[in-house]
Length: 209
Image (cartoon, rainbow, N blue to C red):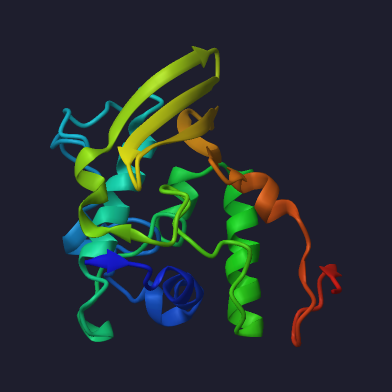
């Protein structure tokens, strides 16, 4: 089944309080019973053993696992969904740096306040809105560069042909966290840093058409 879904619609819904229901592990990854808490050993999305905490790829693997769990529930009635995308609470603050988490929070708040889709209108882990359910089955994740408290992680998968997404990770407060996602469309941090379109209810700096 092709998923042009939801992603704009679900990204908008993600900003609403109903998504962060008590006990739900949602908001960005799979969470709850569907996605788990990330504890334990298990395996990553690509079938490799789950990364250790000192491995820069750990947050990336966890993000893909949570994303997959969320999408597995996307066709269920709202009351039966217990997972959340990794870029929303409760996962956002533990997987992303303070800088990127703040940008994501602002974008989600824009959607909530204005009922408009924010800058993030697709799945940043895939850099796409339209994809098949089984796209996660072929994901491979590797650390391609690491120096001191900065690392770069590469995710490869097939989506209308081979696709590569790069993640910039920083060690922040003793843990690795995602500071940017760079796919064929460009940098997520740059996208979120631009002013939003002016809309009713939005009182922060905005861009007029």
